Amino acid sequence: MSTFHILNGDCLAEKFPKNLEGESIIWREALIDGPVSDNNFFENRKRFIAENYDSESDYDELVVKEFQKMQNLPEGSDIFFWFEDDLFCQVNFWFLISNLNLGKINIFRVFPKDTEKGFAESEENDLLELFYSAKEINDTERKLISNLWADFQQNKLSKEVSSEIVRNLEELITANENRFNGTLENQIKEIQKNAESFEDVFKTFTQKYPIYGFGDLQLKKCIDKFSR
Image (cartoon, rainbow, N blue to C red; front, side, top):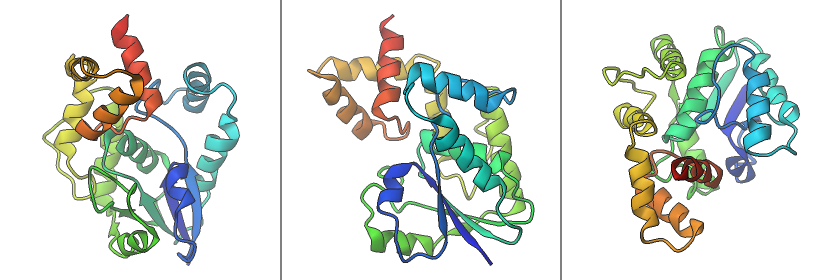
């Protein structure tokens, strides 16, 4: 039986336990931002990333090729999804659960010990411990998570859903709503009042509102948008 680890980003990959059985595949996307329609999905994402983030990166190599690896994993494999609890990571996770061929594959989620800090402060031994505490994603949860992705695409997430695999779901949905109802804009502007630089804003924002999971590029985009 083959084992695979799907890691959300390169930071976790850099400190991933070397003695943990299985092959690692890295998911490098930021689906919290930009087009998420099923039509020409990767073409539209590639264009958006090039125009808004990094025009020099090889999207096909870094994203599409890795996704194709995930699509072609052998039947009977065990796949472990290492995704954190913030909105950024969860949207990526929902997409993969919804779009990968997982019918005859055993899938699990590895949970970070701390919902706010994620895997950031976990050392190799901690990660091993978390791996052995992974929870299997059953068919009911697969369907629920796939529905979350579909609802996210249409911006109609419902707080009436509960999940054993997606923790703090109501808080995630509130955070997503905040992106559009003015709350996020007010949160950022309040922080800006006492900040001298973008670095100060980013540090305070990530400490105060870890639920969003934004990197510096996402926060910069939000600030630019709200400044217009």
